[in-house]
Image (tube, rainbow over all chains, first blue to last red; front, side):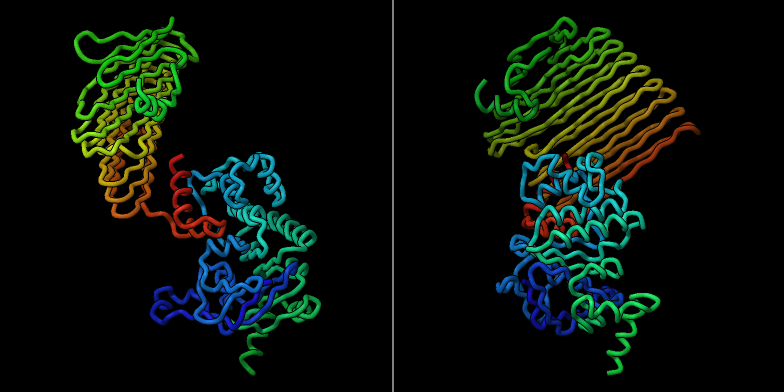
Length: 254
Length: 305
C-alpha cells in the first residue's frame, strides 16, 4: 500500500525560469493506493502527473509531506533504496544505452544475473516483441520509439515490483504498437492481485480497465474514485483532455 | 614462467596454457617458447630484435599468438615483427603486451608490426594491452602498426587497452588496394594520470576499397586521451571514422577525426562525440535497483564491451 500524505512540490522561482516553466508543481496531494489496485492518473498536460510519478520513484523529492510504502516512511530514501523496497518506474521517454543489450537490462531488472535467454524472451513476448530478434539487440538509437517503449515496460515487468508506476506508456508509439500495449496492460490487470499498478495516461482504453481513476489538475486532485464513478464524467465530450479542462475551470470557479 | 607472468598472459592473450597453432612468447626480452606449424612459420630476425611470421597461401582457420610479457622493472625494448600473409588465407593473429612493474624504473615495450596481407586474404588481428604492479616506475607501450593490403583482402583489427598502462602512443597506418576493407575497433579506458594517444592514417588507394575506424573510450580521473584519425580517399572508395568518448572526473579528451578526399567519388564520413554519462542513464539503472556506482560501472562496461 502506498500512501501520499500532504505531498507538495515547489520549484524555486529562479530554477523555474531556468527550466523555462517546464517543471510542474504539486499542491498538497493526499491519496492511498491499496495493494492489488490498478489506478490510472489522468488530467491535462502540465497538471503535475509526471512530477507525481517521479516523486513516488524518488527521482524528485517533495518540498513537504510524507510518502509511505506499507507503513514505512520512504520520503528521504533515494531511487535505489525505493527500487529495492519494491517501487518500479517506467520512463515516459525510455533511456538509450550504447553497448548495453536488452538481455543485460532484463538481467539487471530481475536481479538474476544468469537469467536465461528463454526467460528474457518470455518478458519480451509479454510486451509483444518477437523476442529472438530483440534479446541481444543494443538498447541504442537503432531501436524505434515503440520498440524502446515496450522494452522499457518489459524491464518493469521483469522487476516484479510491488508498486509499478508507468508514465504515459502510450506516448510516442504508433497505433499498431498501441493495440499491443493495451493487451499488455489488460493482461497485467487480469493477473495482478498482489502488486499495485499506477499508470499515467490519457487513453480511454486504459481508463476503461482501471479500478480507480485520479484526475490531476493544476497540481491538485480534482477527482478520485472508482472507474464507474469517474469515467462517465470524463467521457461523452470531444476528448478526455477537454473534459479535464472543464474540470479545471470548475475548480477555478469554486 | 612464474605466476605473475602467467596472469599477464591470460589478460593479454586469453591464454591458459600453450595455444594451438603457431606461437611465440616473449618474456623479459627473450623468447620463452616458439612453435611454427606447417603453414605458419616463425623465425627470428637477424639484423634486429623481432620475428618474421610467414603464412602460406591458402592457410585457413589457423591462429598465431605472439604475446609479450614484461615483469622486470626498468626493461625497455623495441621489437620488430613482420607478418607476411599469403593469398587467400583466413587467419587469426593475437598479439598483445602486458607489463607488471613493481619497481621504481620505467618499463617500456615498443612493438613495431608490419602486415603484408595478400590477395583475397582475411586477417583478424587482436591486440590487448594490460598493465599491473604498484611500483612507481611507469608502464609504457608505444605500438606502431603498418598495414599493406592487396586487392580483395580484408582485415579486422581489435585494439584494446583497459586500465593499467601509464603512457601509450599508438600509431597505425594502412594503405588499401582494390576492394580491400579494413575495420578497426579500438577500446580504451584510462585512469589516474595516464595518457593515451592514438593516431590513424588510412589511405584508400584501390578502387572500391573501404574502411571503418571506430574508437570507444572512457577517460577517468586526470587522464588524457587523444584520438587522431585521418582517412584519405584517392579513388572511388568509402570511409567512416568515429570517436565516441565518455569523460569522468577531471579527464581531458581531444578528438580529431579528419578526412581528405582527392577524388570526386570518395565518400567519407566522420563523427565524434564526447560527453559525461547521461544522468538519466544512471537514474534508469537506479530504478532497477543499482546504486549510483554500480550503475556507472554497468554503463561503462556496456560501452566498452
